[in-house]
Length: 84
Image 1 (cartoon, one colour):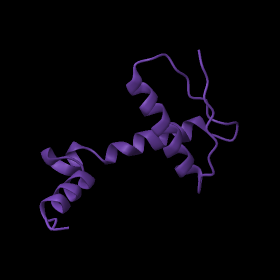
Image 2 (cartoon, helix red, strand yellow):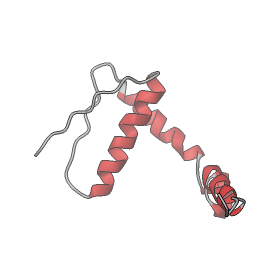
Image 3 (cartoon, one colour):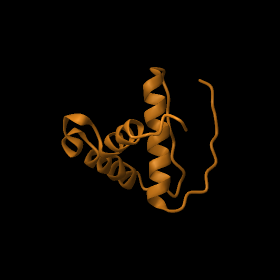
């Protein structure tokens, strides 16, 4: 197994959890064997809880049109000035 190291300076524990969870999700998408090891300060229960909190951005929150962020991005694209 090969290794990469990422050093971050997060704003707070939630920001750290977001980064760890994003790295995990990206690695999960690769389909290879991997481990993501949080540092000694991390509370793995809090990392899991933060992951669970992402479910508030969901199909039910945005209806069948997607998440609120996706709806806003689509609206912005549709209303963009084509001359810009």
